[in-house]
Image 1 (cartoon, one colour):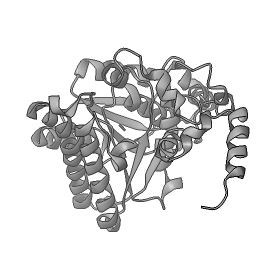
Image 2: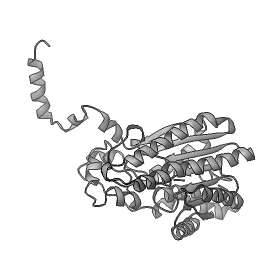
Image 3: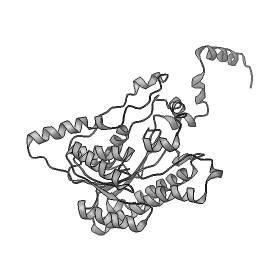
Image 4: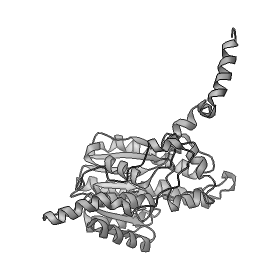
Length: 336
């Protein structure tokens, strides 16, 4: 998931650009479900505005896979609002065209759409050629295309395994390597690559084993390229999102909606993440402000991984009265 800028010469157009920049998030996803019992969420309200200044990506080209919906659409919207010419790609051309037209009308910057199945290396090669032809060599490459679903691992067929790993691992590799080779050939220099992975890429997770395996492979590849291709001016970073409610992801990971409250209960910040917050983080990592960040995996989960990893973190459910009783018992304990 996820720039030649339009240069605004007249002050009236500048004002229009600034207003669009300030307000574009109002066109985004609807307000997410919030657990009213998670009172601490009031301390961590999501900001619905862009973090970087207008025209931060003036003159930049961004290529975003999976850019038609969800996180990819959010990142594209933000980059375009910051002065970028974006090129989005996915398999569904009708969805891509609708998204490109919507974002272009909101931001005033042209968004191009290219149909691409990242699982096919020949298709990826042709897509990259078209990208360079219509917009130039990219300064930003966001690998956001993904697939996932929950299933007991013993129920997975070889085709189910390939479906996920072909998109997530092979697709990211085909896009990254093809664009990287073209940048090296052109001696372009200064390109930021970003992969959207997951918090369980490091730890693994049952019931999403193909995704966990593929995302872990993506992170290993990006860390390896961060070391190897820095000499060509390329940076490689990753964002590990926790639960962010998008239609595509939740339709396969929480189809009944039953698990959403449980997700929120194990997030110390007391709420789900938002597309806008992730888009701001992605924009920062792809900007020149992050030029010394390379090979980093940024956990973006409201503290979920920290909570579920701690052996005694479930003690947060113990009441004050129960602590008084336990403290008394502990004080009475003598010897070892």
